[in-house]
Structures are given as structure tokens and as C-alpha cells.
Length: 224
Length: 269
Image (cartoon, rainbow over all chains, first blue to last red; front, side):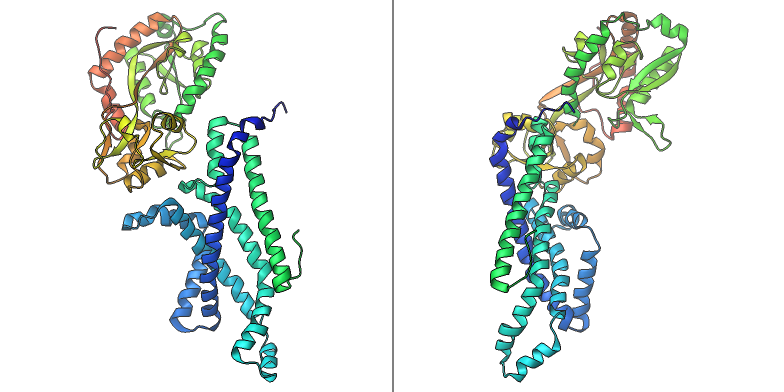
């Protein structure tokens, strides 16, 4: 292979790309927070709700889980304006990713609720815990411990999913890498650096999440 | 994307120059007439100038145009598929008699091949909608203008240099850009406007091409350097095609709209 790496041509853009990584981080954070909150409510409805409300939630989750995220965002970005709802690039992607994540997070948190055992609740009642005490000392520690690893995984996946925002004109990491590529044609260097940024984003997230899980929720596990 | 090709062509012109150094084997008009076959190069990567139709046959504006020219010459047409990088070497080495496919006349290319009078034009200009007030592309240089462009194309560099104040929204492809303009996500697009004609027709929007374009490209038939017997006949033929309305009619057929700046057919050439 006669290709000579020329990182020098790309280094002036490192800050520009770091700005893109920051936007990717924001998008992942927003999608995760909203997806988590919606998912929590929907998981509760899925497990303990009944009637039309439960069916509506189940229908939503099944629909979202079985359609590609790209199609969902295309719908929000390009189809909704035809009925008068015009969302900006960033908003459309953030909403699309949050809705998509909410379905996955519903299923994950539903599994968390399922992991609670009848005996644990009976035991709490036997030793005279109040309802608040039961939730504080029995339900939450158990659920969080079970849920923490899959929730962390979902966050990492979301970080990498932000790359599709480039298609909708959000100048995040992938979009910026593409822009520089069009100017310098140093594809090998640019996309290696972009990949490195993603590794940094996910590695930092993995490490932080590991320590939080380890010290606050006594989750067993390793970063790698 | 189309413009990127223009620049790669500068490099290809050099390659072609090397090929031309070899003895030219281009066929004169007499040789073509005697042979009974006209060999024309078209580029199917540039629809609707040339494309593959439902039967996987070459079709398009250039194909109709070449067919008509062969008919006027009274010979058979033999189409050759060429790409942007190799089309000039193809004609310079005499493997085809002339080449089509948005062959914009440039002084750089004219060092290597000769050109006929223009066959059609292309407008590098601003596409916007009727409700926008712009009459000159320079008016777009304000912060409240959003340009919608295809990511990775050369007009972006032009905008950065000449319209630095304008916001730029980059999307993935031409259909998305035209749709975004139609939906009001942005104010204007700067690119070769003719080639989005078909896409524009797909939206119920009053389009407007800003009066003062950035540039108008004149696309000719490219022939081998010094093949004047062929060029002189083609010039006469082109004049007739323009005068009789064949050019405009064929353009409308393939582009879904009139040529934005029709060729001013002149009898003096």
C-alpha cells in the first residue's frame, strides 16, 4: 500500500471535531434522559396498568421496536412538515432518538420490575417496613442493581447512534468529519480520528458509569 | 457532486494530453460517412443527460440528441459509455467521434480537445421560492439566510468564501435538499439548477431561479483536437437543431422544465 498518512492536514480541525463530539454527547444525553423517563412510566403501565392505556403503550413499544430509527426520524423530519409540524434538525433528531430509546428503555425497565420477587416484599412487610421504607430499602436497591448494566449499555449505544444526525443536517461528529473529508479528501485520517473521538466518548461514559454503579449501587462488573 | 467532477477533469485533461501526444487517430467527417457509423460517448452517471431506462438501454437528453445528429448525418449511431475521468481521453484518442455529458467549455479542456458551438447550457445559480425577494445571489450574504446544500459538494466552499454570513444546512442528497426548500427549512440552494428540475416538479411550490446567476456553463460536443471537418459540420447541425426547436423540446422532455438560459443560436460561427 503506497498511501502516506498525512495527519498534519487534519490537525487544524481537531477542535472543530471536538465540538461535534460535544453535540453527540448532548444528543445522547437528551435522548437517554427523556427515553429513560418515558420508559419508566411506560414500563410501570406495561406491568401494572390495564385496559386501553396498557394496550396503547404496548402498541407504541412494539411499533417503535420494530421500525428502524432512521425511518422514524425521516418521518419526523420530512413527513410531519406536510401536516404543518416543522421541527428543526436538532429537535427532530433529539425527539426521534428519545422516542426510539423510550421503547427500548421501557422493555429494559419492565425486566427490572419483573426481577422483584414476591418474597422480598413479603419479608419487608414482615419486619414492619412502611411503604416508603419498602421502596427505599428493598425495591430500589434491587431494581437499580439489576437495571444499571443494561441501562449503561443503552446509553453507549445511543452515543454511537447520534452519528445518523448528520443525515438531517446536524453538525455533530460524523457530519463534521464528512465536511472535512469533502475539503481535504484525507478520509483515512479523518474517519480514524472520528472513530477515536467516539471511543473516547464511550470509554469515558463506560468508566464513569462503572464507578457510579460500583460505589452507589454495588453493581458487580468490569469496564471491559 | 457534479462540480467535483469538473475539478477532477483538470487532472484528467493532463492525462488526456499525454494520450494526445500519440499520433491522433480521430476520424474525419468523410471517414465517418464512409464507415456509416457515428461513435458518440455519453455519460450515464449524469441523469437525465444519459441514464439507463427500464429496459436497461441508454436513454436521456444526450442520447436523443446524438440519435438525431446521426440521423441528420445519415449514418448508424454507436453509443459508448464514458465516465467523467475517461471521457476526454476517449475522444482525444479517437475511440469515439465526439463526447457529450455536460462538456462545459473551459480553456483548460480546450488545450486538449476542440469544442463545437454550445449544445445546451447549465446554470450555476440560486434556486429559491417565489415568496423570497432575492434577485441577485450576492443578496444572500446575511445571517438571516439559510442555504440548503448537499453535504460534500463544491458549492459549499464557494458559499464559505463568497457568502460567509449565510447559515448553511447540509443534507445528504439532492432530493432531500429540494424537499427541505419546498418545506421552508431554508431559503435557497446554490448549485447547478437544471439538474434538480425533475425534483422541483415533485413539489407543489412556486419555484424561482434567481435572475443573476453565479455563472452559466456552455456545454458543447467535444471532438478531437484539430478535427475541423467534423466540427464544422456539427456546428451547422447544432444550429439547425436549436433553430427548429429540437433542443428545447428534448430538454423539456427530460428535465421537466425549459432550459433556464436557452442557447442563443447564432448563424455566425
